[in-house]
Length: 383
Image (cartoon, rainbow, N blue to C red; front, side, top):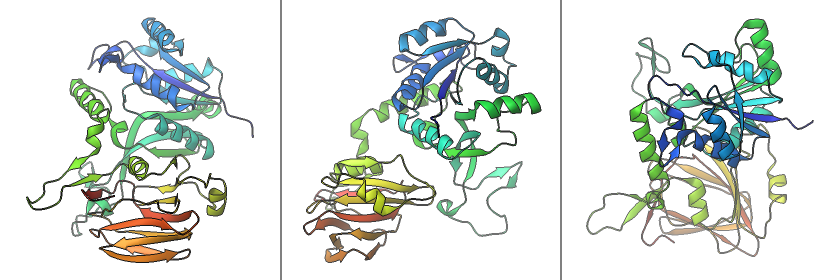
């Protein structure tokens, strides 16, 4: 299969009814649109990156940031112009197989998320791919329940089926299907009757700037993200107790635990083979490979060398379990130690202190099954 030519298109009107010159407005010292450009470049997912605007000032900005400029007709930049039309105009006048529209109004979108989105579009064989937000809480549409019943007892939000809304920060279409839908049906933005997929956007990437209050929120979020001290979460403790803190970000946790190589870009594939994954790794160093990451659970292969492991911790709101794929481990659970080996399964209830250490004379591999946003609570003597 030949490589797809993937084009990023960043739409940027000069006019904006709610926030004047929004895309040129400085955020943390840089123009708002610059964050989308930098994230797109850092993702490594695109053959070309364009700013699409009617205003020549964006041509100067594009040159400064090392991307291309496409000047759309003025009539496609009015308040009444719709996305279907200016995207169709862009597709007709550029060369590509897949167009990814990246909105500049989500300045905290991560390069890794953009790369994952593009990979999903290609690997899933979609004609259209839409970024969405999960809302895992009771939701209404026109005052009627969507994901719950009025005639049932209250359910914890973490057990509810998420309702999804468009995030819009990332949209993708194949050139051929988009043009065909526009010419035959007069619309293409939602995917018409083609094969359409949905890609969940999480965390700070969901912040979208529509008004002045959003600018304030984005500025605060950006400063928070850029401050390393915020990775340590503080909790109230009795005066005679140990100091504890919580960590949630799994890549950061594994890095602190000494995992040298991490792969979070090949998750949620329809079929994987553990033996092939293990054989393809540099097993002279520790590594992890996340296989599943959804709103309900995650599964990560973790390989560590003898003597390596994680820090003493517990999970306040989630049970988790592990399957031992290779080697031997020492498990410490609430002060009691166990030796486990290939084929064993370990279950740990929430609020149980535990620590895992690889032992023996070869790498040990475990499959950790939990959820990606579960807090890990540590205390001062955790090592």
